[in-house]
Image (cartoon, rainbow, N blue to C red; front, side, top):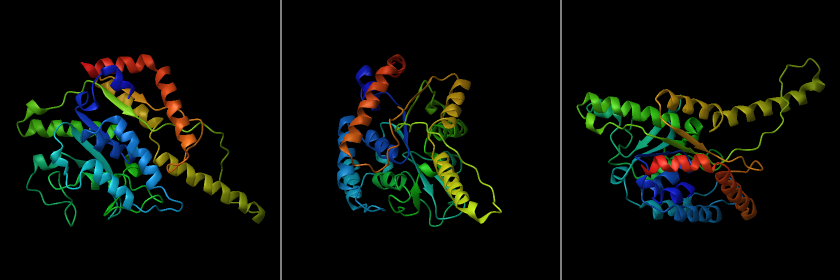
Length: 306
């Protein structure tokens, strides 16, 4: 919203590509469908009231109803023509699991080899068949919070910050376009903007694992294993730190300005929190963070407005 106020333009007029993972996939879909930012924010408050229940996994019937209302029950990816849209999902019907990109355009591989046999059986829907709300639901199938959707689990299991995946996709699509004689459609990057959901505060950690000879030390070893599992889980889905550093370095190598906006929160907030006081605090912290980085926000807005 801060960027929208400064550019005085809706996001669709500022970006050629929009990508998102999980909750970001739902937002990206809504933006690509032309929904105003404030309407999408109101939708999130509706989701937390109607979808997040007492026990997990949550019943997704209300979520599906909301997604169909904002994205259209029969709208397919190809119907969205105002922007290139990418939504990530984790394809989990075979091992190893694989990142899947829901696109509103032909994939680079299908452009180069349109007659190639499908990689999966049964074949995955292409951009002319893939329903948008189903793609959004697939990307947001967070383990333990929701059941998987069809063959998909949450895209955040592989690409919780999809910036590098998007840059890779743009590069591969540009190569495919040149190969098939459509160089006039190549995307020339001018700025990359990455938005996060907020970072948890840094906490002290004391962890180690040894195999004790003393049985009395076994309990401490179990606690260490639990901590290691938490580390593996958090790092697998970490959208910040090294992931951001890599994206920034990539953009620097191709001389493209890169902006990452993600406030540090006052506490570790559960994904399914319904506490209005906690959510109001997050909104306030985000606004304060954007004011603190006003110089970067203004420069970014100027680039987007060009």
